[in-house]
Amino acid sequence: MSNASAAVEVHEFKAEMKPLLHLIVHSLYTHPEVFLRELISNASDALNKLRFRLLTDTNILQPEADLAIRITVNPETREFAIEDSGIGMTREETIANIGAVAKSGTLEAIKAMREANQQIDSNLIGQFGVGFYSVFMVADHVTLETRSANPDSAGCRWESNGEGSFSVSDIEMPERGTRISFILKEEFKQFASASEIESIIKKYSNFVEFPVYLDGERINAQQALWQKRSSDISNEEAAEFYGFITGNHREPLGWTHISAEGAVECKALIFIPGEAPPVDYDWREKSMHLYANKILIQENSKELLPEYLRFVRGVADTPDLPLNVSRETVQSSPVMTRLRSILTGKILGILEDWAKNDAEKFMKFSKIFGAHIKLGINTDYANKERIVNLMRFESSLRSPGDLVSLREYAGRMKDEQKDVYYLSGDSRATLKKNPNLEYFLEKNIEVLLLSDPVDVFTVPYLGEYDNKHFVSADKADLKIEETSKSAENTNAITSLLSKMREILGDAVENVAESKRLTQSAATLVAGSSGLDPQMEKMMKLMDKTFTGSKKVLELNPNHKLIRNLAVLAEENPNDPLIELCARQLYEAQALTEGNQIQTADFAARMTEIMTRATER
Ligand code: ADP
Image 1 (tube, rainbow, N blue to C red):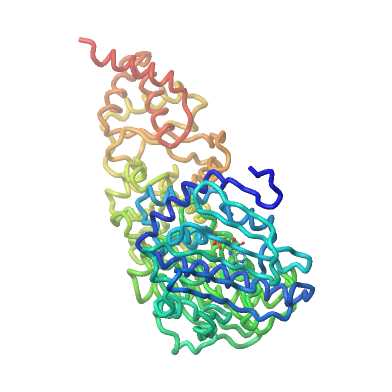
Image 2: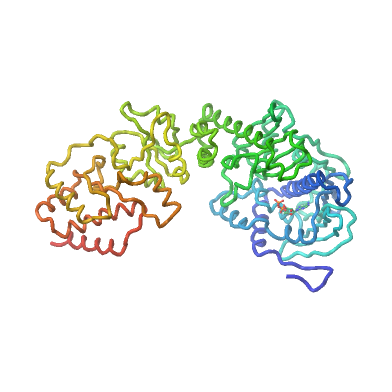
């Protein structure tokens, strides 16, 4: 909404800004100094963008101006100002960038985290692209003046008290870049003391690749951390740097420094985050940052990492890319292919090291990022074997969350066991109740419980492990020995089976006596002609209307219900109870498998059976 006056235009904040600002101010009040970090970070981004543009285009405003960040404070008046000679913003960009949230869904993501009781604190706020607004914690009124680096640009002033609206107006501004100024609230006057803020920003601004001046005095050392020798980089510095580049100021799970020489030279700092990306946040858009000779060429460079490893953060720097590269040439450069393979190898190496030497850390990693790793086997054929060894699964022989590797599974296999058994389903809890598991539990044979949605997309690709095939525990022709002797009344059972075949007809491939059930009355297993059960689940995920191939209904001859029905079938094959029970047994199993049934018919049959059961 804009005012009629041409000089000063008033805009309402986007609807979601209000609750967002409120959330930010209330989440961060214990760490008011966060605003400094965010403002410096924005200034540094703006300078990086300018420097990158300068590589190919000198037709910009003041191409000679030095690239720096200047902070000035006045303890008497509590005035604070920060300016950079970066890329600046046009009036349109200012309105679009400062007054709206860049990514849709940000508010939802933050709220979801709050509701999940995850603390939204100063450590995470920088990840959401809302850092600028943290100034409203320490100031009631903020002025931002900016002029774009385009040669024909004009200056623009943005002002707001961070409540409902902001105003923009044209101004005279001789220099390109951005200046943000405000008067600190009385209770935050410490940020107008030079010595006080120097200590806060010194450590942090050491990672800024441009000089930072405080009241005219240079305060940062400005050395690219990844250029140091590995042994000279402390854990603390690394963690600090991780916060600087990701906006996530929590400790990473691990990090490493790489200095590679050979066909392609590369120095890199690699970080594995300690938590999953925020809910709904698109981690695929993130990646490591690419530098060429200490100049930032591309943030979140997708070419640097294969998609399955994009949760990894950090920087990679190579002298082997030409400096005047465009983003397009970066994408097609053979140097990128080499870099990607170096980084991939190192990342897998860190994980292998944890798997071997730090089980606790690797377990933590697997719970957060295991699904990502599993996706790698579909795309990274060169590293398939390494990835397979990094995969972890829930197991029927272990408690929930105690994941096992295929190597452990194979090592524990019984002598007579030929295959690796698995069962897939929605959750571990439902899998544990699956009747098809009864046999294996009784015989103490391990079954991998695949409840991670990506498992369905990975196990079929594995084919075999260590010359052992993967076999679903719900396949009809499992070569298993009988659990216990069949019921005595074999004739009766035979009549029941044929009667039920007649009733169920086309709905099933067959009705057969089960060798695998020990407790349940019936189960459905994959038919001999059917698709691999795992494949079927994949099809169902992709196509909700896919019903799957016909199944075999197996009956447990030792279950009381089946024995009673067998007697009935022999004495009076036309007793309506047989048909009612046949359909009910089949549909109940189909339902548990996630197939659709006619629920009204099911309910009606249920009532009929209960009526008969209660007759005296
Ligand atoms: P983020 O920096 O994470 O995107 P912010 O709310 O801090 O989120 O900033 C929003 C946007 O405003 C930035 O993405 C950038 O386009 C623009 N911006 C902020 N500060 C500056 C600056 N000093 N110079 C140029 N553009 C800026």
